[in-house]
Structure formats: structure tokens, C-alpha cells
Length: 385
Image (cartoon, rainbow, N blue to C red; front, side, top):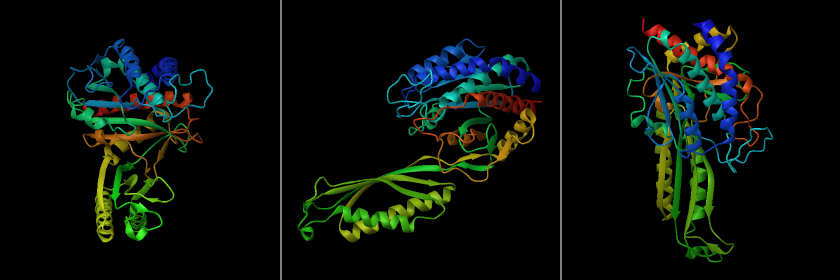
């Protein structure tokens, strides 16, 4: 099917590019992707797909060959945008003030739609089913977890999953992944320490929670495991120059590439807080949650990604990933449900993700379309003989 996929990608590229521009104009934040999902649903309903009712509210899931026996491949794209004010000046800039596709999800949606168009044209030759899944709320909300829990990948059962993310500073128009951790797990903490307020001139008659917080921050920096990341990103305490506050707060994130390191970080974190607060006579409230597990490609998935890249694009277009990213992705929940792969699509020397001047590069859309269609076609062909 190689030649057919390459030919069909060229045929559908213009439509996929136009769709990206249309989606770029209507960015919506996590869980609020109403216009986005309505547009995607309308496009998919025009194809020979079974478009399902939403499992949450703004997801769009469609099945190709849903009643055909054999394995199922699930292809996923994230659809939410970020609360960032766009500074680009193209003819398709955001029309929603304070929101933009600064992480390339418009490109991810366009590539998946293009792959769906290709696979629909080849549906009679696919020995199995394909699930086209547009997922809301990847940023912050991690809605992959409740979407999967709601049964979105159960019927037919997902046997393999794949997703692609445009990535700056990866060799241009190349595919990159690895076996094991591709992206880190992410946890978030919110700590409130309560002391005893008082006058700034009489610290001995108060219990300054800022001093307690300062000790905790310093201890975390020294004691948290070096294999992980524990970063305090926000401190809040006090309202005036001569008032010792009653409470002070810190918020931040932890990142790790191994679950055992994550458990160690949490143990150290809780121990530091408890020890120092007890020593100082303060009380505390801690909300500590790991929201995103490690995003880890299976060995089978990484090998398939390499094989598909070399088959459809030739040697030199697959770039083995040397280091895992400490950023996080809720596609991790899909990869804990079945074998699969998460890949970076190289954008080369490009504006950073989450930047107000970021824009997905249209010139790599065709590569993403071919790669996703090739992953589905080649997996099904190999596993449903």
C-alpha cells in the first residue's frame, strides 16, 4: 500500500492544510473545545466512518471498519489550545482573544484528519479497524484518563495506539522516538503552611510561615533525588512590609522518568514538609498529585515507527531519540492501556512551544499524514494475516 498512501497524501494535503488554518482561528482551552469538536465532527461525518456520540463532552471518536474482525489501531490527536495571546500576523490568526494554538495541536488535528482521509480511501484493503480519536483537554486537564475510563477505546478493544507531536529542535521533517520513556511524568503540589501572624517589629511573638516555607524550599532543593525534578514555581505569603502573615503557600511541579523515582520524590517531599513544620511548630495542608504518568513507547511501537519511517521516507528520516523530554503528555494513559508509540515530528530550528509566536509548519503536515496512515496500515497488515 506504500505507493497508494503516498499518492493519496498528496491528494488530501490541500484540504488538511486548509483545515489546520481553520482550526487555528478558533482555539479553545481544555474541556471547552465546542467549536473545534463541532468542526471535526462535521468533517468526519462526511467520510465512511462511524462517528460515535461523545464520551465526555468535546471528544470526537470515529471508527473505520468498526465491525471488521481483527486488531484495532487507535490514532489520537489532541485538540485543545492554550491561554496565550497570539502575536503572529498570518491570515489565519486566532479570532479568540487570549487563546491560541501555541503547542501545535491544530497541526496534530490536521495530520490525523489527513491520515483518516487516506485510510478511508483504503478501507477495503485494511484487515482490521482503525479508531480516529480527537482528544480534548491534554493541556493541564489530562482528559485522556477520564476519556479512557468512559470506554472510548473499549469497543473494539484497542490493540495498538499512536500519536505524533510537532517538536522544535528535532531534525526537520524527521520522526523521532525511543523504546521506553519519551516524556516525563508530571506531578503538581500545593502547600499551605500556617503559623501565627503578628507585627513585623516583633517576630518573637509570631510564628512566621515565610521562614518555614524558606526552610522547606531549601531542603527540597538539597534532598530531592537527582534523577527527578522538583521545582517550586510560585510563592505567596504576606500583604505588607510590617505584617507577619498567618499563612504562606508554595506551588510547583515534579517530573520523573521512572515510577520508582517518582515515589521517592513524593516520600522525600512529604517527609521534608512534616519534619520542618513540626520543628517550627507550624501546621500544613498539602495537595500532591501525579497527573501525567511517564509517556513510554513499547519496544514494538518504537520498532514499528522506525520501520514505517524508513519504508515511506527512506533512510535518514528516522532520528533515534537520545534523551527523554522532561515535558509531559497524557497520551501516557493510552500507552498504559496497550502497546503503542509516541513520536516527535521534527520542526527543526523553530519557535518554542507555548510561545506567542509559535505556528505549526504546514510543510511537515504531509509527513505526519503519511506516517500515521502507514502506522495503521502496516500494523494491521502484520497482525491480521
